[in-house]
Length: 169
Image 1 (cartoon, rainbow, N blue to C red):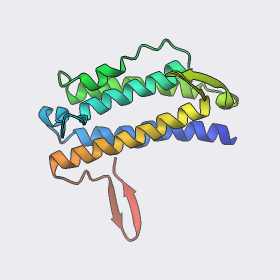
Image 2: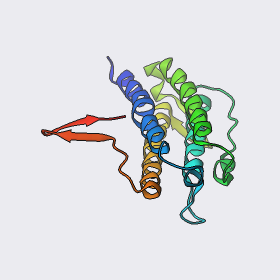
Image 3: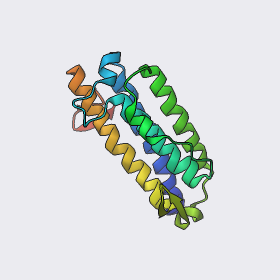
Image 4: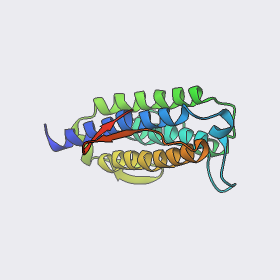
């Protein structure tokens, strides 16, 4: 497999098989209040971060790379302070990631060097995809931290025995 295809496939794997399951598992232990709790007025809740991840991935990949209309209302992702359950949020995120994955599944590796304009920035397709995976990673970490903070529990993603690590998501 060519390196461009490997990059695309690994990006798909990180989004769907690493980050999404960790977010899903984090939300299993939380109340509705926990989901929308903000540490302070300058910070976001887990609900805001999930909406933001869905919006960002859709804007950068589905619209920016795939050419669909850009319908994102970014500020609304941060303004929301409830009204969606964990199941609602996960459904919204999963729908966005299904659309992202469909674009990436059909993305020719030769297009990674092509230029796109996303959020007013001129970027290559490779840079756009790298941004989405990196951005998803950062906010997934914030969601996991908030889930641990609110639940007071280890999220149980790994089991270590005899020097080997088993993933549990």
